[in-house]
Image (cartoon, rainbow, N blue to C red; front, side):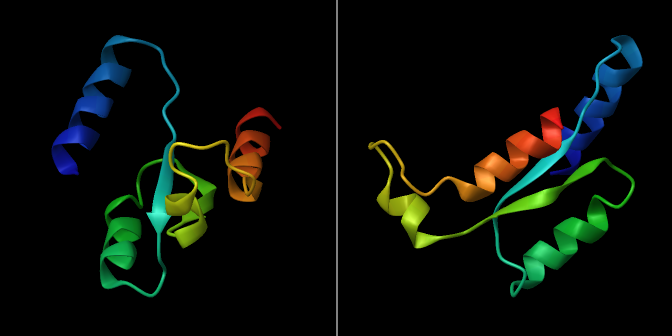
Length: 79
């Protein structure tokens, strides 16, 4: 993850772009999720997290019907 974050910082230094991070397949019960949050403390992270749900996996290749969390992401990005 760190090489990607460093690359994003380099891009921001060269171009005026706004960067925000979306945590996807997020499971607060897992240690890795908590470590990711700690590592991203100095980066802009969306409040909305897309959880690691079976219903997302099952909708692969179809038109998903459960998109609530992605609608929250859209709302957060576009107000």
